[in-house]
Image (tube, one colour):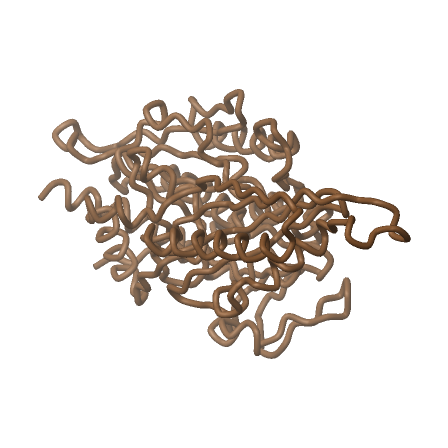
Length: 423
């Protein structure tokens, strides 16, 4: 069984692409109402269009919403027309909660172990909090200087997909079905598929390269909602406030204090659900709390939301003059519900990892991807590892060897689809 490797030139090109992409500021903005939420995301998207065209994707283009789509035609004979069109997707935007402009990527050419000191802050990426460092001895590592995120989420995935396209061009004897390439904006703010035209994309199945650890294939996401609690209080001069003032800040504090301590992000793991208060704004007169509601089943999701409703009812009794309102907005649902209906899209990815000599790790994501919504839109889209670690933080890092492995697994995956479709 053939395993695939990138040669030194291809590996260097992968690194060069990644370094080029992370230096472009593409942070999205959760509070924006336009789409994409920031125009600067298109700076990278325009570059990707030109790179895809240079690699022979003559139809590469960015649409009005900032989506980049392109085709790699099949090189199979007409007799093998049953091979499905496979999509590969990654997102251009980076997380808005951590500084993302002026990224200064740092390279370690052969990691020898130990903590990694960050020159921009004097802090360190520690082995204690990043155990995967022990699995990357001798690797080329790219990390931040500690003042910004790196952007491996998901520019590692972008670099890997572009490298896959380049590899296919350089190896015309490798037979594959048609590929559709897609780069999306606004994934980090949960809007990445808002204007995604599944029919126009034209893939039968797809994969996001947006995962983390070597060998990971993720077929489940959280079920996710956003809960918005608004509190209307009453302000008067504090010197004459007795029996009159209703302090919305105190009401909000009482709500947060009552959240179950064993159902917070910082106290849960694996398949445990949580309520996460992630944004608070307001004053005495009016306050707002935004919470992420996360669970792997719709039943558990409802339980978390019912818990929040019970908390609001309890706080209402303590502050009878306050006006409390809860709005729950649907974000996405566990893509595992849909992938289970046609599991070969998962099984072939796991097989591709095994054929590359890597132990597959089937996991549920404690988060979401564009693939969650796309799966419910009719395009089943599991998630493949891209190699990045410590996403969304100033300690973000990635192994070049793991990125190269993601490209190799993608090549294997195309081979599996051809083989299985023939049989």
